[in-house]
Image (cartoon, rainbow, N blue to C red):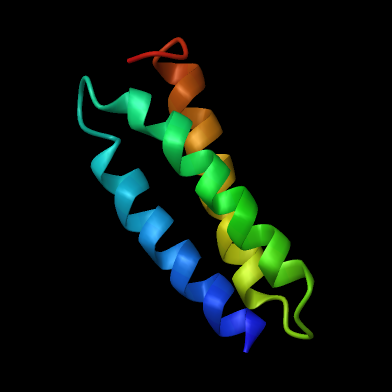
Length: 73
């Protein structure tokens, strides 16, 4: 059950991260990364690892996007 919750959080965060790739919306990653960290924490508590891995991917995408935009853009 925790894996399903983690997958849902990861899916929402991934869609938001895709929107945050638009120019001038990179600041949204400051909100997306903590959401994905919460999802990864929930996924870590489950027996399956797919939810945790999805959230770790979203965190990586968010960090790369923030580094490309200088942390703001």
